[in-house]
Amino acid sequence: DVKVTQSSRYLVKRTGEKVFLECVQDMDHENMFWYRQDPGLGLRLIYFSYDVKMKEKGDIPEGYSVSREKKERFSLILESASTNQTSMYLCASSRGDRSYNEQFFGPGTRLTVL
Amino acid sequence: RKEVEQDPGPFNVPEGATVAFNCTYSNSASQSFFWYRQDCRKEPKLLMSVYSSGNEDGRFTAQLNRASQYISLLIRDSKLSDSATYLCVVRQAAGNKLTFGGGTRVLVKP
Image (cartoon, rainbow over all chains, first blue to last red; front, top):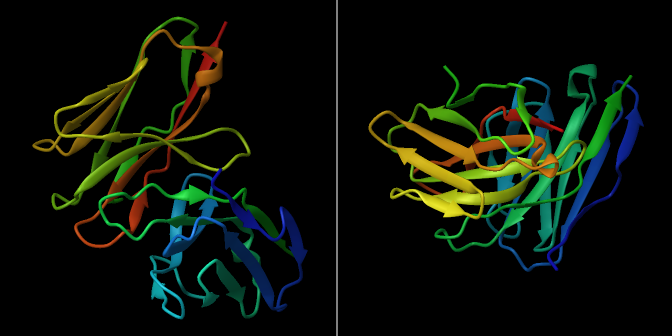
């Protein structure tokens, strides 16, 4: 059974704190993604990675960075959290074969920045 | 204009009825199309891919109209368990990047 796990379901941080969100997949997928989901705006892509140590900006990368040191793990970093980064964060992974693009999502982390 | 647009709903559907809704996309070079389902407070999951000739999976039928740049989803004989948000998803010409619509909420009532 495919599985994507995220380090926390709920997280509360203060403005200016550095925040790490961790994502691990056990499907040996090449591709991993970080999204945020906000009411009325849907899922928006923050960053993605096609391979270890490789990253590409998504649609809204400002204020975020990522790290992929191992194939199974993709971390999202908020260098200095701000209140407008309060959101639901979803990690996903998919196979590298471009003909098959199903993304498998983790359960999400609801981050609140006070 | 958003790349992928959906009517947010909610569509209130009597149990057993048929419901259909569309999604429009702006990039004519879009290559692949999908419907994902997201239950309340859960993660999105792939419902079905959408093929040019249209395709069916049980009570669900998906259609693609490239000329008018929209895809549709039809649910027949609605069940209470069909209540969810349906996300329209489009893959652009290159890579594995997907663009998600805002979702259409469907509520099936007894």
